[in-house]
Length: 427
Image (cartoon, rainbow, N blue to C red; front, side):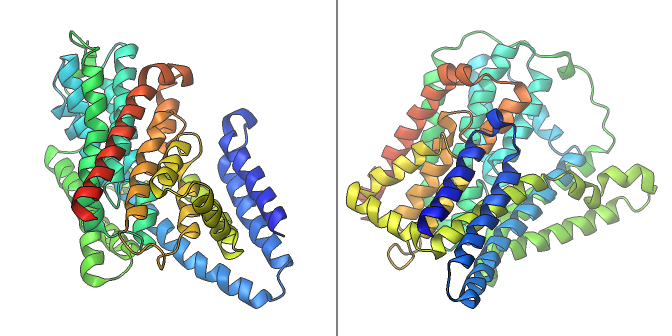
């Protein structure tokens, strides 16, 4: 049974990794892999009732992640429908290349901590396409956005799906991860910014969109209300969890409901046709359901490996072979540049128990940082990179030549800073 489970998972994983070459959607592969892993485990198990109970238990944990993501994605789509992100565009007035790189980097860094790294990348790349005329200048800034978004997402419980998984899974707490990873994540961004600044000189050429007044469908006041309310809801979700002790998805659903009421009240005086694209129902139609189903399939497959004991055996093998926990976690981070970090983190959650490594221990914090930032090293290593690649048609080898070394510098520097802070202040 163990060999068959591993075979199914490895084949499925390989098909996901080579999605672009096989021309097969990774969501379909993930769903098939997840179901086949549990089917195999069920067929070879003597106690069918125990397997069903284990599946339903894991499904409860998985559902909390999926509902959280659905709520967050819908809120962001609703803000975008109200042109809320146009306000951020108006803040980007700099034309000096060196200053612009720093401005874009810091906006992406802090925006990612609130919106998540994927959404931030989509928003920032969309804005850059409207602002920067020459593609070479724009692509360099897009590369910085990927690094900034992944670094910014790593230190926030809602900024990266892997950090969110660790938070919902109980391995980390919101306040502690923000405190412990903020400086390493900031270093992960600042080092690449310093390095790239030496290469830049002169000004960028802005597009004509900069001087043309935007024809907003909504008054500025309404754009600001929805943007600020959306950000406030996302920021307050960890606070809601802290004070109520309810799962994070409950706070997200509460915020979603409140935002729904506000938008319904705001547009009550206009006709149905005029407000149709501004409703939350319309936003629900735009969210990426395929990504949610991908997470479902992957997490189901990982849960089957965990229940069968494969992941705990793998953790033991790593401990015996490599031994050093820092090296193991940094290797996982580097591996996330090639392989999606969601299954890597999910596997790690199954490999190591909270009994062995308690909440907010070195393993979980460092894993959140490495899995979140290591994906920047290659453009295929993170959802942010893949999104930017599709939007700007970025060549893989161009990214390796221009951006990968910057991301690697940031990753190594941030990792070193985290380990030093942990060693001198917390051990």
